[in-house]
Length: 275
Image (tube, rainbow, N blue to C red; front, top):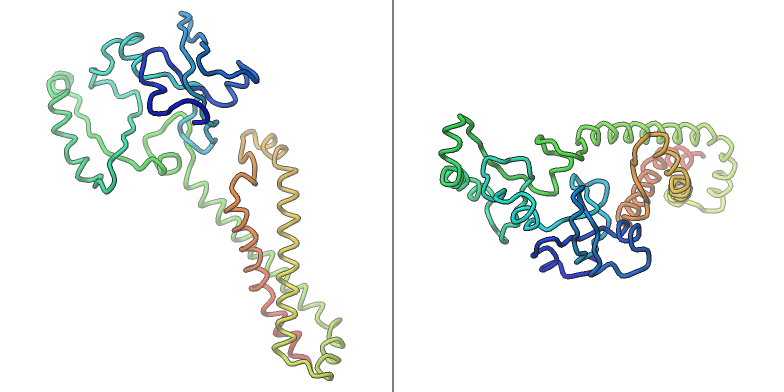
């Protein structure tokens, strides 16, 4: 929530919380709180009681306007909150800390029997309810939804990334080893003046790490420039902004340093072994 009180924003009929971009679209620089917009063909007016941050694309919930539930249950679709055979809405529950989900699930059959037992017997439709962690729904749920990712795609592209990095490391090792003859004189002179094998090895590994780190800097720059065009070519928004998650950006540079260390060990051993 950017504006409004989340505890009370949706407690009364015909109230709504809108996203930041929706507030900008309809109200510009004006304060949207307390203003009204019309929804549905019937022209119902709802009061804006809050503004929320735009929902990220990797969420299975996508909404620009969120209406209060009481708007539906008491006005638009009266009695919907007593229709226990209606399973079209997705239901979310916030459990208390240290709640055991399996113990909670064990109470669902008795709850359903109490609320909709006769209805299920008449229609010969028997339902099982189970819980899924919210953060796993987008990639792991088998229930489907309006927006959903695929963990299999993540695994596939992850494997592609590993193979690309492996090939790059092998190419780097081959190129560095092939050029080692050009540095043989340098190694010989440095050994003559007292350099030891570990000193030379540290130097060559350090050079490898620096090269990988510089490559990572160029990578981040090129990706930030080309990402909009890549999204356009792919026909979908793969990512919006690589700088939105500083942790992953930091991990990228950590991986670059590790790759520099790994790919520099063998050339360092070869170069530092010259007599």
